[in-house]
Image (cartoon, rainbow, N blue to C red):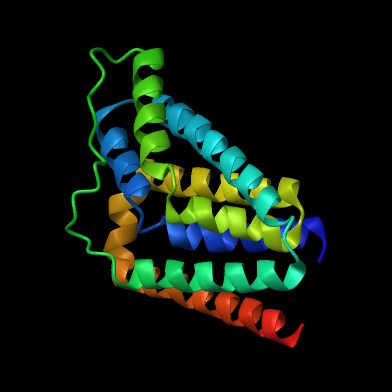
Length: 195
């Protein structure tokens, strides 16, 4: 598989998985209170940090034998699908944090960075990015696809989150993302067992 295909596949998977996530909600809330560009700068930087951490984890996972990597990623994708399907939407995910004292670029971007970096740490999409990095052994393509997907979801949430939810129910988004992960899990587990 070439790098462009890997980046596109990663983008699609991460984009769908991130839509119903707490960081999208945090971006939406921040975008309604503060200047969109300032918020986006902070969340884009936070996503870059989280993707870098996921790529390091994925590179370490890739050191295992190929069949093990396929088996582990398959099980993790199944776990991710289960998390999406059984996630309670009314949970308090800590999306709200301390608001900046003023509306300057550095205060708003810094607050946005901290909120999203903390919310995204160990999150499903970070785990999925690590899995994809291990599976495809192309960290640049996976990292670019994941970062662009996270930034796209953040941008959508900031600019038009409420409009999207008027047209596409959250349950549909969650189910499509879960289905994509189940398909990937099945493929990975098949490859692990088939050798």
